[in-house]
Image 1: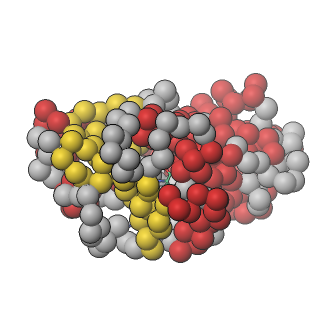
Image 2 (image 1 turned 60 degrees about the vertical axis):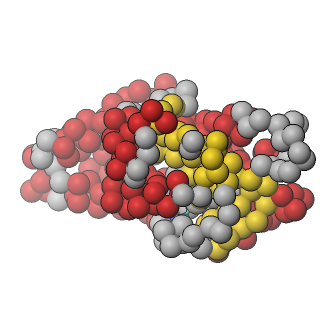
Length: 313
Ligand SMILES: C[S@@+](CC[C@H](N)C(=O)[O-])C[C@H]1O[C@@H](n2cnc3c(N)ncnc32)[C@H](O)[C@@H]1O
């Protein structure tokens, strides 16, 4: 059915794309993919990804067909939200919070597509990084003089991680300064953290230009550095290193070159990130002036979201 959208002259030389389009057509008719369909669908997506990398089919053609299918059949799904970018950019506060909350489409006929989305390793890694952030915060020594540790959260998005930190039983209260470029994200996050606003301040600023006027025990940023090129990465890292207090730590999240759902993100969601390896992150840290013995890279359980830690002496 969906195969009809392929230009007739291209049908013979588009590699695995017709098979993927046929499979999508079958799954749409069946009301969406069920867990037993995931392996075949994931395999087909990766084969089309291989075909793009191998020059068998162009990313432009695949993107155009997937855009048409998404527009026609998936309005209201997370895949549609990823492609249509209602806030003007990938990874906005709304889709990130839908990932945290495992939200699914209101229309039950679309629900299976959102469950497939949530089953991918990338959204699992995003959910895991919230817990990872909490672990980092939990390692802060309890303040002896009663002053609260201060955390800078750069690109804070929906602040679901903060809300859950505040609502859980924690040994100590922290104060969070959040830098966020999107005013709607700040509005959403302020609402989510409303009962705890005495512990958090939002700054509506571009992190690339904003210079905090104080030092921090922890500087955290997840879901921001993997949207920028190496030059901007180093510039921002250098600036943030300058606001970590002696004895403090800076932790930067970045998607790994190991991301089994990368083709799904790029082909279905038009969601492109700068994936980086452990070695690349360490090399960038060195370029930003960090001492190699103070750097380490860790990861959450999926192995998809890496975390560059830099201790400041
Ligand atoms: C993918 S979200 C991640 C949100 C949050 N850190 C999390 O992990 O849940 C990235 C956020 O960074 C914000 N952002 C992107 N570029 C920024 C910049 N240059 N300065 C400040 N915020 C930025 C976006 O508006 C978005 O809310």
